[in-house]
Image 1 (cartoon, each protein chain N blue to C red):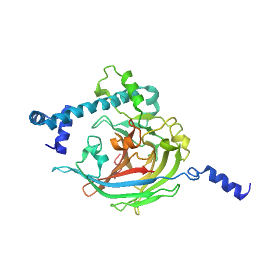
Image 2: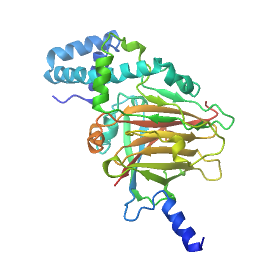
Image 3: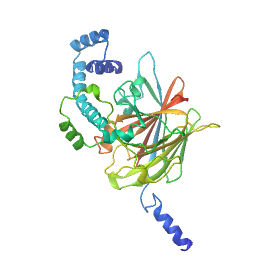
Length: 206
Length: 154
């Protein structure tokens, strides 16, 4: 039996205990009757371990004053939906997010080290964002600069970095997403991540 | 300093002036996303999207259709333009590259211009490696939204 996309989403939500009672009952019946469904849930549960490592890492990073001091002035962590949504809001007169370099991605070695370091029971609910946020290395300026040293990160960079966004009167959010398997493989960076830059269509929607 | 010397000096300092260093192209997918009460649908060509259906903001929609797919060559400092289905124009400009081989990183700028109006996206400055996709979403289009999938290709 091939599972529909909707069924897969329901099963993923059920695994995460995020379904209402009626859906839970339906999923229970499905799991009784479908090997495919059981196999899907097992695979999804296994994949969630990787996600937990990312979330736990981010929670610790978010709790670190050295990182958050300069970043939190610029970053408003989205409170809605999932825990993986950092939201960038423009704050200056020109509503510019300037030199907020979002270095996303870390190698498997780093992830493994973090997993060991954070093996204490960190509740998943405290995770705020898996995005490693790096404070700008230069003071914000009104005019754009092409000085690469001002925005590019030092060290081995992987994943997609957002250096600067200006959308005038539109609200901007940046969502971190993991690289898809194919892209990660092609990039030879299994821990790397990507971003979705979301710009509200409505003007003055910030 | 002679004009020739100045020219040579400028050439050496240009970000992508390394002789024989190939510049990448940019692959652009224009994706229409909608939320419907009926069954979901994901264009089979959108394998990257399919892997993010539990992630924000993709989770908001259950129908994804690829409207356009182009690959444009990039040349340092010269914007590559693509007309979008909503009348706006996406412009991508390669700014510089750093590193070499598999570690090579490219910095690019994107703009989404709108006719007779202020640009929808005035500036997006991003650094990425080849084969690392990123997305620009949020533009309203026919009851849904547009996602632009951007991937540098070697």
